[in-house]
View 1 (cartoon, rainbow, N blue to C red):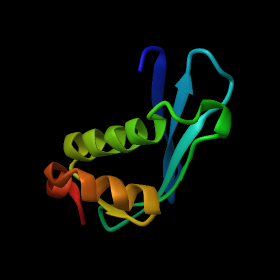
View 2: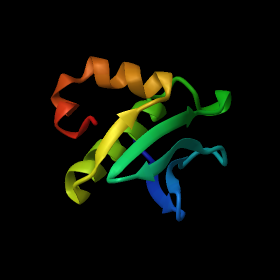
View 3: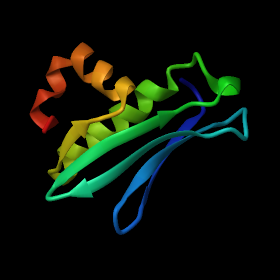
View 4: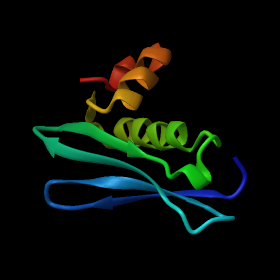
Length: 96
């Protein structure tokens, strides 16, 4: 997708990835909590006005890339993330 920026925002307990399409004020989000080196992917939300563009998938891809770079594991909790991991067995290296 052209014109999509994904950023990571952390808190003490976890954080979220935010997707910013260039042509909208709406944001897609993937939230997570962290415990013992595992990031629990809890919720994926893409508002209807920016839906259907593959944004949720890009959020999960960003988390997977981040896990590989920063050496943490992902436990899919959100139904979308569970389904995304099922479609991508090549991500098993970061799945908790």
